[in-house]
Image (cartoon, rainbow, N blue to C red):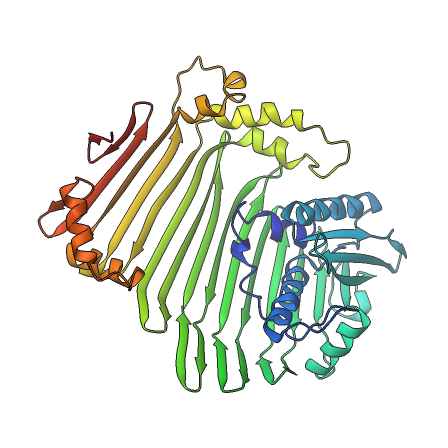
Length: 467
């Protein structure tokens, strides 16, 4: 059995910002934190810092699921959680020995955010375990775990003022058989600094673990920041994640994050508007391969007098060798005695699997105003290729790379988009005409189209080799 925190972090595809994935959805939950012993940061920076803490607390706060579990089980869970956190680069984690008896016990865990920075941020989690069958005389179950969250003294003082004395709440019910339900809540509050007042509503959610399956959901009504004639609003957010782990540490998962519009005005004039945003990620696997995808949709992105509507992006990394990824996940890359040579057979196995990277869709606009791009890159090699030798010759390895890209849109839409992206260029139309004359763009009816291909023979644009 594993802790909720371990699963929550593991199922977001590598390379996505958690979330892709997730880091954004609580990115403003905890305004008002000052690093202990340092100069006061600007309000937005401090808000972002404490929000990152909120993410780890909501997703990785529960360091102990005890109850009917043995000490070996507990330590295995802590080890997996520690590896997931430290591999992510978000934090380091240190846990003291579990202290307890038949009635319950205590586990203290320290999380250090941004451990490599000049100002690492420390959070202490103290989990109190109450064993069943009626822990604390309440719900029927194997145990309950109540986690106290403690910040450095100066930070805690600021938070107590911002939260009006309320505390971050993490409560877990461990059911008989090992399943568990965790609920978390970050209080509403208000914080003022340097003439800027941030006001936010409470965020809450649940994490349910049932064997190898986990699901999580949450909501946050939003945030406003006011001061000196400026106003920033962040709309309501919701998130949902499901995942199922496998014996090799890999598995399938899906996550959805919805963030309301983010807008900023100064003296009544709009500076920028972004959103609403919908982000989705998925990990799918079979016996041999794993693929990971991320999809983003932004309704509107506007900055001063420029605006883009209906932005869409979907990126997929596919055909990744499952056994190689499983071996990679078990390596401790930060260990002092780590031997980089152990990576060579893993990389070779990944390359043999013919991995692919594709932009399944990148588009701006809708209907006749839509401009769309698709692209795919892959390694193409014969069955008798000596991968170990190729790995020592990057130029030869790159010669096996094939890339195909296709872009098209109504000529008028492309000209309008080019004008938005380069507003200082008055001769956009002439530039597009020149691109057609050079064969870079091809006109098909009212549309402009281009196809680019890269392979062992060189680069072709619309089927014509580039000189």
